Image 1 (cartoon, helix red, strand yellow):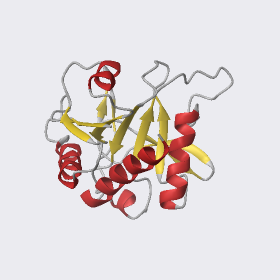
Image 2 (spheres, one colour; image 1 turned 180 degrees about the vertical axis):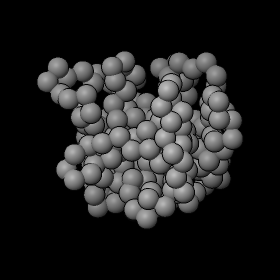
Image 3 (tube, rainbow, N blue to C red; image 1 turned 45 degrees about the horizontal axis):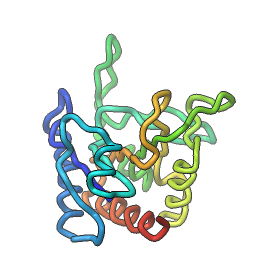
Length: 191
């Protein structure tokens, strides 16, 4: 398994520090079969899997530049735990208390593979076996499927063994380290 961490987020160079720190903490743990690397600027995930003879790639990012899906009153809605300008729209910055008061989500995880389903709604989070695997892990580890927000790389396809972690940097570092470590172990047991 390869765990990649980025040093720079376009337009927000200070923000990827959280994901890098999670990667470095995982490296210190010396997990069997886990290789931690700084993410190259140009990457081919299929080539990286082959080069390292790896089964999975975790691509770690600090979740600060994109909104994530959260379930509120049985409906999936876009949630913004930070300020961001997008075109002519501006969202007010928050003190993150709304996010920190809640136990979940711990992170958003984007996944690839063949995710096209003509009958699915665009916001449907689980689209193939990898999405189901994420839900199963969330239920086993946290006791709820809402601890992790699954999101298919849609409409483009990405390698099905690529998981993009949007680590919510408002959470304490040890929570994200535990998530990545536990998920790596979970996949190692099954594959």
